[in-house]
Length: 309
Image (cartoon, rainbow, N blue to C red; front, side):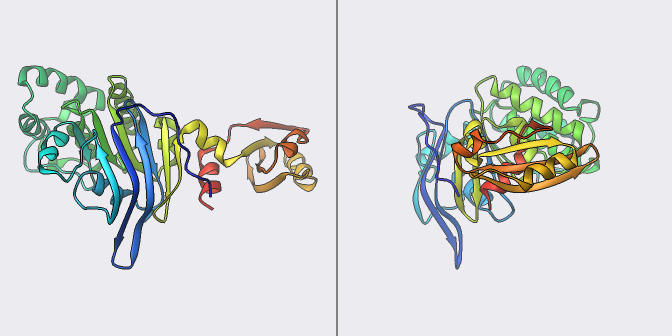
């Protein structure tokens, strides 16, 4: 387990969580969780089922209160009546299951929520058309949603959460159930909105989401934050190195590891084998000169398993 990292922060964070605890009877869902999200971040809340991701999101949205600790969204308390409406106008939210009206068309769903957000309809129609094309739904946008697949509904829900250009978007497992092409389109959309200064908090247990999307990550395990900070810091915290080559070269290396280096695991594949090593001391790293092996990037799964052990 590593200590939570703290970085130099913007004076006006989008979201702050300080020392939050939350229990449900005997279950301690969150245990002293702290994190901060600044403008322009894509911050992935990473953890397995039951780690506390959804509980934390419900607290951030003002749906449940923490037992102790403080939460601020745009500097405001999400449970104050005077703050709640202003916060909601600046938020986009995607929960599971998808919040759609299935007996009307996709276009009518989007227009309904556009009117709730009081969007200027002529401008909205142009933007909605372009976004539907980008996400691959335009050709069927006048069909009733009840006819759509789960993946199509998911993409429509993401569009609904983004169409009013919120400053902060909270997405719970946004690419769950999507095919590879659709995942790519969703990621492209998220990056485009981030380039317009939209900030994202994404709850996920998918390692590829972290690797392909995140600027920052918070790793939760059993309600505790094991790490919160930049992706670069996430890689550094695990202190891992990965090497690949012929099976016999990997076996020679693992048979004579120098002090300060520990074997994490070996993996065989069609092209040979890989070995993941933990660097315990800088002296150990200096003495590591594996022959016949090529150093390759550490996988996000390697880091997750190392920090989550």
